[in-house]
Image (cartoon, rainbow, N blue to C red):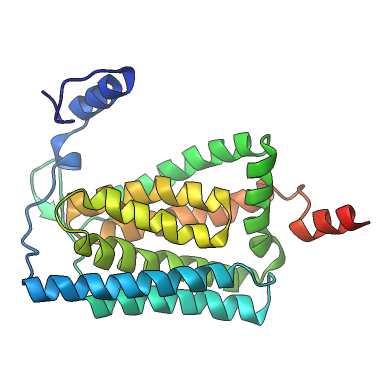
Length: 262
């Protein structure tokens, strides 16, 4: 048996096992915590997260249907962030979390989450180079990046980072806690991806599943939202800074539509 809970049967299993064996225990062993709630509090948390998941997903889809650099876009994206934060706070207690160090001390996670965000950005940048060659992904990425191309840099940065924090407060804070003790990473990631489908953008949905799994794993290891928040902020800031120039030569959705109509 191994960390996967069964004997390795394929190449992927063996690769995961080798990676786990080479990774320091202090990076992957969950920090002890006691986040037990009463049955009544747990049921209330589930009701609140369910309601706010539906509300937030609807508003997310509406916000990304607005024109770039419009008052409606900025207003609705901030409203989405407010919805996630309100849902997180209303559901019950939230926790920042702790992380082990190589010296077996416990501290708030700071450096490791930031470095993780930078590392994951590098992987996404490489994936973006590939996406440019795949028409459906190229159009999807270009469509979301038009908000950065055509928007006010300061406002786009503010709304992007604010929503990054808000998503972690709700999905890795409230919703993860509401998922219970059985596969909370899988459940919270699934809901995160499902909420993102309201944008009807395959690139965003794919990114939400990949990053949601990473953020959920950080939540599992640290017992709180500080690590996923810092990773999310680092990743988002780097994506916002370096991805738009990579797709600057691509036509916007409006331009493509206009050409087709003519």
